[in-house]
Image 1 (tube, rainbow, N blue to C red):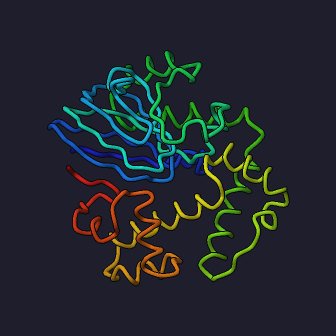
Image 2 (tube, rainbow, N blue to C red):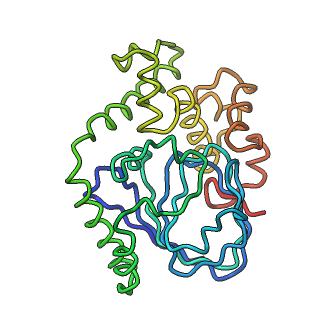
Length: 268
């Protein structure tokens, strides 16, 4: 497997990274939720099947299209690949609303064709003309930066992201406040704007972030699973197992036995 990555500094963390990945051998893998959305440009890919909560490649096989979006997944995705050569943009969930004027909740647990991108043919021509990853990454950074300059609604997205971080901190400190006290809006309106911009309700976003932190700590530290659960703000081990299983469909112990050098990716 070849993997190269680039961090686009111009894009205010809306696009977290741009990568190019090549796989030449057949591969079957399980990908756990990452808390982001990924726009993928297919340079040469043979995907036999993709399966997930709302994904069935018998209906739509992303290997047969130049561009597809892997939405905000709250359940694992299962890939059966014959080969892979893609360029991808790992994006903050708010990028969906910012760049494409779609509510992020519409792409939750979806893999969908990139027909919503008006300039898709232009992007395809440019990426296929360029020969190296640095050229492709820089061109994509500038292209989406120009789209970003046309938008004026980012303040709300960043405010919501800060709200999530404050909520997570309070949860880990044992404080439970009403969502209205964070946002300044009614509970109903708060849930609506969270789903529009971040794709999930505030409570599920907190659990997602706790799950992701747990995966990171399992890989990055020698902490026991009990210690990992406490570090992530879970009440007890049963709470930790329940939330981890909500997103991974396996327990933390099962994940630790199967884990690879790539966080969140299991080979099956």
